[in-house]
Length: 394
Figure (tube, rainbow, N blue to C red):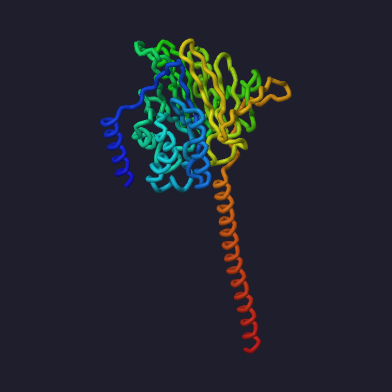
């Protein structure tokens, strides 16, 4: 059954490429280009959460009217029931969260989070589903490296006579293996090498970048530089044991901002050695709450001279007020990535129910063994008494 579905997906992809061409990204006549980042949507939790998420997406898109949407990972909660055995649910939920974009003719691109590939389909199979939509600009790796979806998007100049791209968007796939004790992924050195080669081939064109898992430098940013927004939970980031990621982006000088999600309660950003570094805003109601209104980080790129501005648009239409936080010796965070210790309500229910069932099984087993021991002891006692009685008679 699985192979039939995969074959069907491949046919759809081929047909879509033959019938339709992909959208072209381009700066408008005002020399501007707008991006909305939806992160940690976590579809598949329950119907109410999914409805709230759709409502949030639609409102934000109507307020911002972006030229492109970046889904920066954990679009679905792959560990939940809908994605365990029924492959058609992937199509169902992909259509659900992309429908607001399709209705508004807004192209999108994805990168994977740590939960997207935890169901019955791998991230490579999920990528094929995404690529079958004509508005999807997602790509697979152009060379062999860690991850599935490491690629670059080109934004054309508002001046049609210019052939080379005016700006670039780098997408890094952090849903990788071999990241030591960290179970959610990282960016490896071969991905960094790919970036360096690509940046060089485009003559270090001005760009921004997206990934799902935050790098450890986000903690260093909070400790040393002014930032805007809140640091409300320990960062489940990745460290530089596997690749010189952020230092390479900073050294290159052409990446003006790197943005991510994963830690649902964090939404701060700031200038880190010349590059803006920061979280988006949790965009979906599924999984554990951000304790803030649902929202999305928005980016406005200006072509010439290149500039980048960013803000958070919330579901009610407000632009979030992000207070400045200055470095302080009294508010220093340990420069160490933490393992996540928070669970969604579905996970908590599963843990509680599973624990109850386990305790019940233990009680039943102990009770059964105790009963057998008691019956055996009683039988032995009765047998000895009967034997004693028989001896007395004889």
